[in-house]
Amino acid sequence: MLDENDAFPFNASEWSDNDLDGIGDNADTDDDNDGILDQDDDFPRDATYSEDFDGDGMADSVDLDDDNDGAPDTIDAFPLNASETSDYDGDGIGDNRDTDDDNDGFLDVFDRYPRFAGIPTSEEQAGEDGSNVDAPQGEQSMTLNASNLLVLLLLSSTISISLVLLAQRFLKASSTAGPEEKQAVDINEENPEVEA
Image 1 (cartoon, rainbow, N blue to C red):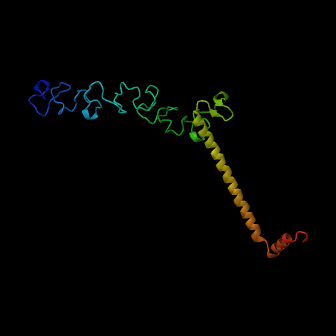
Image 2 (image 1 turned 30 degrees about the vertical axis):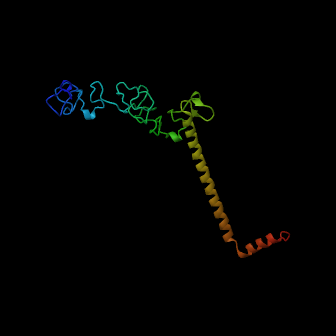
Image 3 (image 1 turned 180 degrees about the vertical axis):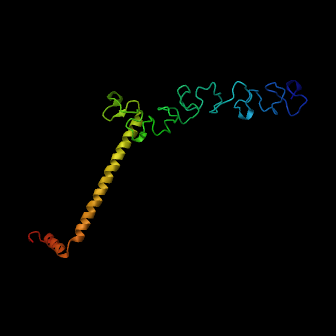
């Protein structure tokens, strides 16, 4: 490197001094002199910026979507978490991870109104299915399907128990019948005209 371009013409290990602090950039741990060590600075040679959370090359201070999740930071409840964008009940847990979005004590999968804490008025209900007006369509279906699934499970359990009881009653009746009763039944089945 020509001396005229070398900030340290008499030091072979240094040739530039980005922040002009008299310490060559190779030895300097903060090349832009912004108070943030180069190892922690996403822009080590630019004192104006230091962080780029999503690594898109745009500093967080000018990036409109710091986590690059598609929701602008101004409306993103979690601007530094790409997996969350909203927190309906404001409890600090994102709606994707929150199992009770309206914080009413009922899990969303069993809550007919997962985005409404309390009993909704008729204006807040949509149609006969009672789904939430403000709930996205997929969420309405999920809650209704969960309720239907619970009913189906209860019904199938009841039917199963009834079948088991019926089978036990049949087996008990067959095992308690004496040989004469069994023979009489067999004879009557073979000769329906003969009365016992």
